[in-house]
Amino acid sequence: MMSMDKNSTSGMLYTKMFRNGEIARGLLHRLEDITKNIQDGAIPIMEVCGTHTVALFRSGIRNALPQAVKIISGPGCPVCVTPNELIDKSIAYAKNNEFILTTFGDMLRVPGSSTSLERVKANGGDIRIVYSAMDSLEIAKSNPDKRVVFFGIGFETTAPTVAAAIDAAKIQSIPNFAVISAHKIVPPALEALAGNPDLKLKGFICPGHVSVIIGSDAYLPIAENHHIPCVITGFEPTDLLHGILMTVEQVIEGKGEVSSQYSRVVSRTGNEKAKNLIKSVFADTDSIWRGIGNIPGSGLALREDFSKYNAEVIWPIEVEKTMENKACRCAQVLTGLITPNECPLFKKICTPESPVGACMVSSEGTCAAYYKYGDISQ
Ligand code: SF4
Image (cartoon, rainbow, N blue to C red; front, side):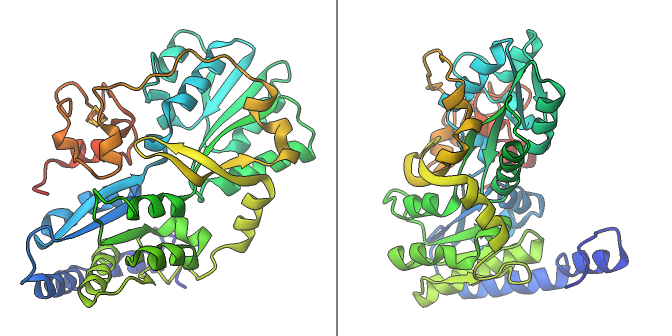
Protein backbone atom coordinates (compact mmCIF):
# COMPACT_ATOMS: atom_id res chain seq x y z
CA MET A 1 0.00 0.00 0.00
CA MET A 2 1.21 3.52 -0.71
CA SER A 3 2.29 5.78 2.12
CA MET A 4 -0.60 7.59 3.81
CA ASP A 5 1.64 10.53 4.75
CA LYS A 6 -0.27 13.30 2.97
CA ASN A 7 2.84 15.49 2.77
CA SER A 8 4.91 12.95 0.89
CA THR A 9 4.73 12.78 -2.92
CA SER A 10 3.13 9.36 -2.87
CA GLY A 11 0.78 10.53 -0.12
CA MET A 12 -0.32 13.52 -2.23
CA LEU A 13 -0.88 11.31 -5.28
CA TYR A 14 -2.80 8.84 -3.14
CA THR A 15 -5.06 11.54 -1.72
CA LYS A 16 -5.53 13.13 -5.16
CA MET A 17 -6.67 9.81 -6.57
CA PHE A 18 -9.56 9.71 -4.10
CA ARG A 19 -10.48 13.33 -4.79
CA ASN A 20 -10.46 13.01 -8.56
CA GLY A 21 -13.32 15.09 -10.03
CA GLU A 22 -13.70 12.94 -13.13
CA ILE A 23 -14.07 9.75 -11.09
CA ALA A 24 -16.52 11.52 -8.75
CA ARG A 25 -18.64 12.74 -11.67
CA GLY A 26 -18.67 9.24 -13.16
CA LEU A 27 -19.92 7.75 -9.89
CA LEU A 28 -22.56 10.45 -9.59
CA HIS A 29 -23.77 9.88 -13.16
CA ARG A 30 -24.07 6.17 -12.47
CA LEU A 31 -26.10 6.93 -9.32
CA GLU A 32 -28.36 9.31 -11.26
CA ASP A 33 -28.82 6.75 -13.99
CA ILE A 34 -29.84 3.85 -11.79
CA THR A 35 -32.21 5.95 -9.65
CA LYS A 36 -33.87 8.01 -12.40
CA ASN A 37 -37.16 6.11 -12.17
CA ILE A 38 -37.21 5.94 -8.38
CA GLN A 39 -39.37 8.23 -6.28
CA ASP A 40 -37.76 11.07 -4.27
CA GLY A 41 -36.45 9.93 -0.88
CA ALA A 42 -37.31 6.27 -1.54
CA ILE A 43 -33.83 5.08 -0.58
CA PRO A 44 -33.04 6.26 2.97
CA ILE A 45 -29.48 5.36 3.85
CA MET A 46 -27.88 6.02 7.22
CA GLU A 47 -24.29 7.12 7.50
CA VAL A 48 -23.53 6.01 10.99
CA CYS A 49 -20.27 7.77 11.57
CA GLY A 50 -19.73 11.39 12.58
CA THR A 51 -16.64 11.63 10.37
CA HIS A 52 -18.79 10.59 7.40
CA THR A 53 -21.41 13.20 8.39
CA VAL A 54 -18.82 15.95 8.17
CA ALA A 55 -17.08 14.55 5.06
CA LEU A 56 -20.40 14.36 3.18
CA PHE A 57 -21.13 18.00 3.96
CA ARG A 58 -17.62 19.27 3.34
CA SER A 59 -17.34 17.58 -0.05
CA GLY A 60 -20.77 18.86 -1.15
CA ILE A 61 -21.89 15.29 -1.86
CA ARG A 62 -25.11 15.53 0.17
CA ASN A 63 -26.45 18.24 -2.11
CA ALA A 64 -25.24 16.56 -5.28
CA LEU A 65 -26.95 13.20 -4.73
CA PRO A 66 -30.02 12.25 -6.76
CA GLN A 67 -33.33 12.97 -5.02
CA ALA A 68 -34.13 9.27 -4.64
CA VAL A 69 -31.25 8.88 -2.18
CA LYS A 70 -31.90 10.30 1.26
CA ILE A 71 -28.88 10.44 3.55
CA ILE A 72 -29.72 10.21 7.25
CA SER A 73 -27.10 10.96 9.91
CA GLY A 74 -26.84 8.38 12.67
CA PRO A 75 -25.45 8.12 16.19
CA GLY A 76 -21.77 7.79 15.33
CA CYS A 77 -20.49 10.69 17.38
CA PRO A 78 -19.27 9.42 20.77
CA VAL A 79 -19.60 12.81 22.44
CA CYS A 80 -23.23 13.03 21.30
CA VAL A 81 -24.35 9.58 22.46
CA THR A 82 -22.82 9.75 25.94
CA PRO A 83 -25.81 10.02 28.29
CA ASN A 84 -26.28 12.85 30.78
CA GLU A 85 -25.97 10.39 33.66
CA LEU A 86 -22.25 9.87 32.93
CA ILE A 87 -21.62 13.52 32.14
CA ASP A 88 -23.15 14.39 35.52
CA LYS A 89 -20.95 11.77 37.17
CA SER A 90 -17.80 13.23 35.62
CA ILE A 91 -18.93 16.67 36.81
CA ALA A 92 -19.38 15.32 40.36
CA TYR A 93 -15.76 14.07 40.37
CA ALA A 94 -14.54 17.37 38.94
CA LYS A 95 -16.30 19.35 41.65
CA ASN A 96 -14.54 17.36 44.39
CA ASN A 97 -11.06 18.70 45.11
CA GLU A 98 -9.69 15.23 45.91
CA PHE A 99 -9.89 14.48 42.19
CA ILE A 100 -8.36 15.52 38.89
CA LEU A 101 -10.79 14.82 36.04
CA THR A 102 -9.20 14.18 32.64
CA THR A 103 -11.02 13.82 29.35
CA PHE A 104 -11.05 14.77 25.67
CA GLY A 105 -11.56 18.46 24.80
CA ASP A 106 -15.03 18.11 23.26
CA MET A 107 -16.50 16.72 26.47
CA LEU A 108 -15.93 19.96 28.37
CA ARG A 109 -18.68 21.88 26.61
CA VAL A 110 -21.35 19.17 26.66
CA PRO A 111 -24.16 20.37 28.89
CA GLY A 112 -24.99 18.03 31.77
CA SER A 113 -28.19 18.29 33.80
CA SER A 114 -27.29 21.55 35.49
CA THR A 115 -23.81 22.57 34.38
CA SER A 116 -20.88 21.52 32.19
CA LEU A 117 -17.29 20.52 32.84
CA GLU A 118 -16.24 23.81 31.24
CA ARG A 119 -18.17 25.79 33.85
CA VAL A 120 -16.86 23.64 36.69
CA LYS A 121 -13.32 24.25 35.41
CA ALA A 122 -13.97 28.00 35.28
CA ASN A 123 -15.02 27.75 38.92
CA GLY A 124 -11.76 26.11 39.93
CA GLY A 125 -12.37 22.40 39.24
CA ASP A 126 -9.17 20.54 38.31
CA ILE A 127 -10.12 19.32 34.84
CA ARG A 128 -7.43 18.59 32.30
CA ILE A 129 -7.83 18.01 28.59
CA VAL A 130 -5.86 15.02 27.36
CA TYR A 131 -5.28 13.44 23.96
CA SER A 132 -5.12 9.88 25.26
CA ALA A 133 -5.71 7.81 28.38
CA MET A 134 -1.91 7.40 28.62
CA ASP A 135 -1.66 11.18 29.21
CA SER A 136 -4.01 10.70 32.15
CA LEU A 137 -1.85 7.96 33.52
CA GLU A 138 1.14 10.31 33.40
CA ILE A 139 -0.90 12.96 35.24
CA ALA A 140 -1.69 10.36 37.93
CA LYS A 141 1.99 9.51 38.28
CA SER A 142 2.90 13.18 38.65
CA ASN A 143 0.14 13.84 41.20
CA PRO A 144 0.33 10.96 43.70
CA ASP A 145 -1.68 12.90 46.30
CA LYS A 146 -4.69 13.21 43.94
CA ARG A 147 -7.10 10.67 42.48
CA VAL A 148 -7.12 10.94 38.71
CA VAL A 149 -10.28 9.94 36.85
CA PHE A 150 -10.17 9.57 33.08
CA PHE A 151 -13.63 10.04 31.53
CA GLY A 152 -13.27 7.77 28.51
CA ILE A 153 -15.59 7.97 25.53
CA GLY A 154 -15.32 6.54 22.04
CA PHE A 155 -15.94 3.52 19.89
CA GLU A 156 -13.79 0.52 18.97
CA THR A 157 -11.14 2.85 17.56
CA THR A 158 -10.46 4.50 20.92
CA ALA A 159 -11.05 1.56 23.26
CA PRO A 160 -7.71 -0.23 22.54
CA THR A 161 -5.67 2.80 23.62
CA VAL A 162 -7.69 3.11 26.84
CA ALA A 163 -7.29 -0.63 27.45
CA ALA A 164 -3.52 -0.22 27.01
CA ALA A 165 -3.46 2.59 29.60
CA ILE A 166 -5.46 0.56 32.12
CA ASP A 167 -3.19 -2.42 31.53
CA ALA A 168 -0.13 -0.19 32.03
CA ALA A 169 -1.61 1.16 35.28
CA LYS A 170 -2.01 -2.41 36.51
CA ILE A 171 1.50 -3.45 35.50
CA GLN A 172 2.99 -0.33 37.13
CA SER A 173 0.68 -0.60 40.18
CA ILE A 174 -0.53 2.98 39.88
CA PRO A 175 -3.04 3.35 42.73
CA ASN A 176 -4.51 6.78 41.94
CA PHE A 177 -5.71 6.26 38.34
CA ALA A 178 -9.17 5.04 37.35
CA VAL A 179 -11.55 5.28 34.42
CA ILE A 180 -15.22 6.04 33.80
CA SER A 181 -15.85 3.88 30.76
CA ALA A 182 -18.44 5.34 28.40
CA HIS A 183 -17.02 3.35 25.49
CA LYS A 184 -19.45 1.93 23.01
CA ILE A 185 -19.58 -0.73 20.32
CA VAL A 186 -21.06 0.10 16.92
CA PRO A 187 -22.71 -3.12 15.59
CA PRO A 188 -25.34 -3.45 18.39
CA ALA A 189 -26.46 0.13 17.66
CA LEU A 190 -26.89 -0.73 13.97
CA GLU A 191 -28.89 -3.77 15.00
CA ALA A 192 -31.20 -1.51 17.06
CA LEU A 193 -31.56 1.06 14.27
CA ALA A 194 -32.15 -1.51 11.55
CA GLY A 195 -35.04 -2.88 13.60
CA ASN A 196 -36.62 0.56 14.17
CA PRO A 197 -39.86 0.57 12.15
CA ASP A 198 -40.05 4.40 12.18
CA LEU A 199 -36.81 4.72 10.24
CA LYS A 200 -37.40 2.19 7.46
CA LEU A 201 -33.71 2.30 6.58
CA LYS A 202 -32.64 0.70 3.32
CA GLY A 203 -28.91 0.60 3.98
CA PHE A 204 -25.98 1.53 6.19
CA ILE A 205 -22.79 3.31 5.26
CA CYS A 206 -20.56 1.71 7.88
CA PRO A 207 -17.65 3.55 9.51
CA GLY A 208 -14.28 2.95 7.87
CA HIS A 209 -12.06 3.46 10.91
CA VAL A 210 -14.16 1.36 13.31
CA SER A 211 -14.23 -1.37 10.66
CA VAL A 212 -10.42 -1.41 10.50
CA ILE A 213 -10.56 -2.68 14.08
CA ILE A 214 -13.64 -4.93 14.05
CA GLY A 215 -13.44 -6.22 10.46
CA SER A 216 -16.24 -6.51 7.91
CA ASP A 217 -17.52 -9.82 9.30
CA ALA A 218 -18.78 -7.96 12.37
CA TYR A 219 -21.70 -6.64 10.29
CA LEU A 220 -22.80 -10.03 8.95
CA PRO A 221 -25.50 -10.66 11.60
CA ILE A 222 -27.06 -7.23 10.93
CA ALA A 223 -27.17 -7.76 7.16
CA GLU A 224 -28.56 -11.25 7.62
CA ASN A 225 -31.10 -10.46 10.35
CA HIS A 226 -32.50 -7.40 8.61
CA HIS A 227 -31.67 -8.07 4.97
CA ILE A 228 -30.02 -4.66 4.79
CA PRO A 229 -26.86 -3.64 2.90
CA CYS A 230 -23.94 -2.70 5.16
CA VAL A 231 -21.25 -1.03 3.07
CA ILE A 232 -17.97 -0.12 4.75
CA THR A 233 -16.81 3.15 3.29
CA GLY A 234 -13.74 5.39 3.42
CA PHE A 235 -13.68 9.14 3.92
CA GLU A 236 -12.48 10.73 0.68
CA PRO A 237 -15.08 12.06 -1.80
CA THR A 238 -14.80 9.18 -4.27
CA ASP A 239 -14.90 6.72 -1.36
CA LEU A 240 -18.18 8.22 -0.20
CA LEU A 241 -19.77 8.26 -3.64
CA HIS A 242 -18.60 4.73 -4.33
CA GLY A 243 -19.93 3.51 -0.96
CA ILE A 244 -23.32 5.16 -1.60
CA LEU A 245 -23.43 3.70 -5.12
CA MET A 246 -22.63 0.20 -3.81
CA THR A 247 -25.42 0.56 -1.24
CA VAL A 248 -27.98 1.81 -3.77
CA GLU A 249 -27.07 -0.95 -6.24
CA GLN A 250 -27.74 -3.54 -3.54
CA VAL A 251 -31.08 -1.92 -2.67
CA ILE A 252 -32.16 -1.93 -6.32
CA GLU A 253 -31.06 -5.54 -6.76
CA GLY A 254 -32.92 -6.55 -3.57
CA LYS A 255 -29.73 -7.58 -1.78
CA GLY A 256 -28.81 -7.15 1.88
CA GLU A 257 -25.12 -7.96 2.12
CA VAL A 258 -21.96 -6.77 3.79
CA SER A 259 -19.51 -5.28 1.32
CA SER A 260 -16.47 -3.09 1.63
CA GLN A 261 -15.60 -0.08 -0.44
CA TYR A 262 -12.65 0.42 1.93
CA SER A 263 -10.92 -2.90 1.36
CA ARG A 264 -7.57 -1.13 1.01
CA VAL A 265 -7.51 -0.96 4.82
CA VAL A 266 -10.37 -3.10 6.14
CA SER A 267 -10.05 -6.87 6.35
CA ARG A 268 -12.76 -9.42 7.14
CA THR A 269 -11.52 -10.07 10.65
CA GLY A 270 -10.07 -6.67 11.54
CA ASN A 271 -7.14 -5.96 13.80
CA GLU A 272 -6.78 -9.01 16.05
CA LYS A 273 -4.22 -7.35 18.30
CA ALA A 274 -6.49 -4.37 19.00
CA LYS A 275 -9.53 -6.61 19.46
CA ASN A 276 -7.63 -8.82 21.92
CA LEU A 277 -6.46 -5.77 23.84
CA ILE A 278 -10.05 -4.58 24.18
CA LYS A 279 -11.21 -8.05 25.23
CA SER A 280 -8.46 -8.44 27.80
CA VAL A 281 -9.54 -5.34 29.74
CA PHE A 282 -13.20 -4.81 28.85
CA ALA A 283 -16.30 -6.99 28.73
CA ASP A 284 -19.40 -6.22 26.66
CA THR A 285 -22.19 -4.73 28.71
CA ASP A 286 -25.57 -3.09 28.21
CA SER A 287 -25.20 0.60 27.59
CA ILE A 288 -27.41 3.65 27.35
CA TRP A 289 -27.10 5.74 24.20
CA ARG A 290 -28.52 9.22 24.18
CA GLY A 291 -31.53 9.11 21.89
CA ILE A 292 -31.71 5.36 21.60
CA GLY A 293 -31.80 4.21 25.23
CA ASN A 294 -30.39 0.95 26.47
CA ILE A 295 -28.83 -1.27 23.82
CA PRO A 296 -27.89 -4.76 25.02
CA GLY A 297 -24.18 -5.54 24.73
CA SER A 298 -23.31 -2.16 23.24
CA GLY A 299 -20.94 -0.87 25.90
CA LEU A 300 -17.55 -1.76 27.32
CA ALA A 301 -17.20 -2.20 31.09
CA LEU A 302 -13.92 -2.96 32.88
CA ARG A 303 -13.51 -6.65 33.63
CA GLU A 304 -13.59 -7.86 37.23
CA ASP A 305 -9.81 -8.25 37.39
CA PHE A 306 -9.40 -4.59 36.41
CA SER A 307 -12.03 -3.28 38.85
CA LYS A 308 -9.27 -1.49 40.79
CA TYR A 309 -9.24 0.90 37.81
CA ASN A 310 -12.99 1.36 37.58
CA ALA A 311 -13.68 4.80 39.09
CA GLU A 312 -17.35 4.03 39.65
CA VAL A 313 -16.41 0.97 41.74
CA ILE A 314 -13.47 2.21 43.79
CA TRP A 315 -14.51 5.83 44.22
CA PRO A 316 -18.33 5.87 44.14
CA ILE A 317 -19.64 9.42 44.10
CA GLU A 318 -23.01 10.98 44.69
CA VAL A 319 -24.57 12.59 41.64
CA GLU A 320 -27.30 15.22 41.64
CA LYS A 321 -30.54 14.16 39.96
CA THR A 322 -29.94 13.63 36.25
CA MET A 323 -32.35 15.39 33.93
CA GLU A 324 -32.54 15.69 30.17
CA ASN A 325 -33.12 19.10 28.63
CA LYS A 326 -36.60 18.58 27.22
CA ALA A 327 -36.22 21.37 24.68
CA CYS A 328 -33.22 19.71 23.04
CA ARG A 329 -34.11 17.21 20.33
CA CYS A 330 -30.74 15.47 20.14
CA ALA A 331 -32.49 12.16 20.79
CA GLN A 332 -34.47 12.39 17.55
CA VAL A 333 -31.52 13.83 15.63
CA LEU A 334 -29.29 10.95 16.69
CA THR A 335 -31.76 8.36 15.50
CA GLY A 336 -32.40 10.14 12.22
CA LEU A 337 -36.04 10.85 13.04
CA ILE A 338 -35.59 14.58 12.48
CA THR A 339 -32.91 16.80 10.98
CA PRO A 340 -31.46 19.62 13.10
CA ASN A 341 -33.46 22.12 11.00
CA GLU A 342 -36.57 20.67 12.61
CA CYS A 343 -35.38 21.48 16.14
CA PRO A 344 -36.96 24.80 17.18
CA LEU A 345 -33.76 25.83 18.98
CA PHE A 346 -31.42 25.21 16.03
CA LYS A 347 -29.46 28.37 15.15
CA LYS A 348 -31.82 30.51 17.25
CA ILE A 349 -30.87 29.57 20.78
CA CYS A 350 -28.55 26.63 20.13
CA THR A 351 -25.29 27.50 18.37
CA PRO A 352 -21.72 26.15 18.59
CA GLU A 353 -20.86 29.14 20.81
CA SER A 354 -23.79 28.42 23.10
CA PRO A 355 -24.75 24.76 22.66
CA VAL A 356 -27.92 23.48 24.26
CA GLY A 357 -27.27 19.84 23.41
CA ALA A 358 -24.35 17.52 22.78
CA CYS A 359 -25.01 17.31 19.02
CA MET A 360 -24.06 20.98 18.70
CA VAL A 361 -20.83 20.59 20.69
CA SER A 362 -18.77 17.98 18.93
CA SER A 363 -17.12 18.77 15.62
CA GLU A 364 -18.65 15.47 14.46
CA GLY A 365 -22.11 16.24 15.83
CA THR A 366 -24.94 16.39 13.32
CA CYS A 367 -26.27 19.74 14.57
CA ALA A 368 -22.78 21.27 14.46
CA ALA A 369 -22.30 19.95 10.91
CA TYR A 370 -25.64 21.39 9.76
CA TYR A 371 -24.75 24.69 11.42
CA LYS A 372 -21.30 24.88 9.83
CA TYR A 373 -22.09 23.65 6.34
CA GLY A 374 -25.53 25.15 5.91
CA ASP A 375 -29.03 24.05 5.19
CA ILE A 376 -29.79 21.36 2.69
CA SER A 377 -32.95 20.23 1.07
CA GLN A 378 -33.10 16.73 2.55
S1 SF4 B 1 -29.99 22.12 17.59
FE1 SF4 B 1 -29.26 22.12 19.71
S2 SF4 B 1 -31.09 21.90 20.94
FE2 SF4 B 1 -31.63 21.27 18.86
S3 SF4 B 1 -31.27 19.07 18.80
FE3 SF4 B 1 -29.39 20.02 18.12
S4 SF4 B 1 -28.15 20.19 19.98
FE4 SF4 B 1 -30.28 19.84 20.66
